[in-house]
Amino acid sequence: MRRLIIVMAILGFAHSAHAHGIAGNRFFPGTLAFDDPAVADESILPLFSSSKQPDEGGDVVDKRFTWSIFRLLTPTLGVGVDSGWVHRDWGSSRSSGFDTTNLTVKGEIYRNDLHETLVSSGLTWGIGHSGAQGVGANAPDFIAPGIFFGKGFGDLPASLAWLRPFGITGALALEHPMTGTSINSGIDPVTGQLGPMLTRNVDTLHWGFALEFSTLYLTSRFTPGKLPKEEPLNQLVPLVEFSFVSPRGEKTAATMNPGLSYVAVTWQVAAEAIVPLNSEAGRSVGARAQLLLFLDDLIPSLFGKPLLTH
Image (cartoon, rainbow, N blue to C red):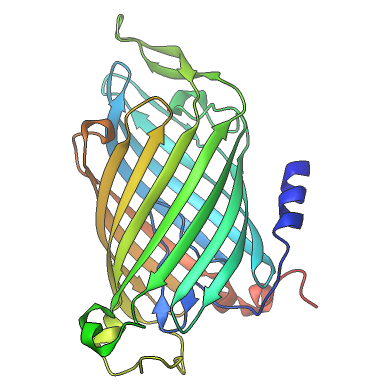
């Protein structure tokens, strides 16, 4: 907890409040494979995913139900918590249990509405041994500093007007475990039986980017170079996310995640496929879907303003 307080003090800057992941004419939808640059009162209830990936002793199918809530402390600084439930299937054996619980501090560090740019940074603390051994979540404490960005191309000149609907978001986070090994359940490659196995914990780089398309740019709603009169909500946003997991000393697991997002005033719903790009990420296509709630608009009496704002 002391580390959390220190980071809150370091990131304790404040500007004017902005709703959701909006920068000028651009709405950056909540991404599913990695965190987006938005710093806002919001909750994921839930994020569901089903995927098959390699594991010691054979492939494993994970079905995950993840939830999270994020609360603003100041207009540009907030704290969040997330966890989930995992059902793991090795084919011959099955197990279910809680995923690791994480606490996050995140703050907006740069915004340019005219140029549709948004940047934030954060620090996540994974609470050691908060997850179940049977689903591979018996991890030690870890910290993961990260940076998240979004850039829309609505400020391009008329000669490149066809690119204005496009935008890009990205994330980069380094997960650092506090101890080198832990015990989790797995299939023994020799006996074929499910049992406790030693897991090596290494620094892991989580990174990714998404190419997004704002369908509102196909209308006459926006005037290039001018801020909108209303928020860019109630629109479809097709997107393709690329996600990479790079453990130190091991090969990177890469996936492509094409999908579709619809954003309303109080919620966003999104779904996408999980397509492995190499053998480290698996050999089967998976799927994920998410319901994201904008709490400040959904329950304004409770989430209408930051906790520390007078």
